[in-house]
Amino acid sequence: MDPIVARLAEVKSRIAAAEREAERAAGDVTLVAVSKTFSADEVRPAVQAGQRVFGENRVQEAQGKWPALKAEFPDIELRLIGPLQSNKTREAVALFDVIETVDRDKLAAELSRETARQGHSPRLYVQVNTGLEPQKAGIAPREAAAFVARCRAVHGLSIEGLMCIPPAEGNPGPHFALLAGIAREAGVERLSMGMSGDYELAIAFGASSVRVGSAIFGHR
Ligand SMILES: *Cc1c(COP(=O)(O)O)cnc(C)c1O
Image (cartoon, rainbow, N blue to C red; front, side, top):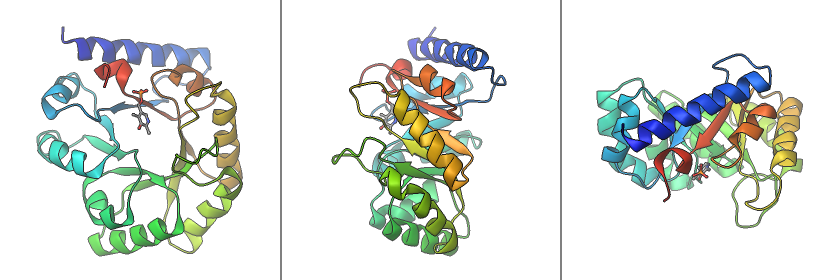
């Protein structure tokens, strides 16, 4: 068996076990397979094995990799999980089904213009910088609920969920709990949280999707 397909099966069975452990319904959690840095040929076995939701962190890299695969497998769902420059909004709206990194008014305004122009909108998540790390994108936790409200009322965007990337060091649990609390306050349904090292914990804290890269595709 292709090693990627074997690791994909392992991750899926661990997600199923974490759902049971958290007394959540089977299939509640969406697996986003993070394929950044891997080529279309490396990703293809995962698609052929039935995986349909993928995450990329760069618009340009995704543009070179996904249009052909999406044409061949129309039910693929592609998610942008990396920072979005306002001047790449047009390309991002055209290619991605979900954009998880809305984090400032300038970008929200640009997305509003571009979704009107193209006549369709990707589903949108607001990224929250739960660790207030200067090198990371995302809105500050204290400002997040008000920003979600502005996305809706001022920019006319519908916000499906929140996303966070906890600091690399330390216990991610408090960050997952913080994101869940902000989601309740903001009236947002979905939580994108948990990566290769901590996706089972994220599921215990209520993740609706987990973004798993290296545990499936190997080291980058
Ligand atoms: C790369 C990346 C992931 C996946 O990380 P792994 O540790 O390889 O699972 C998840 N989320 C974001 C935003 C990423 O950039």
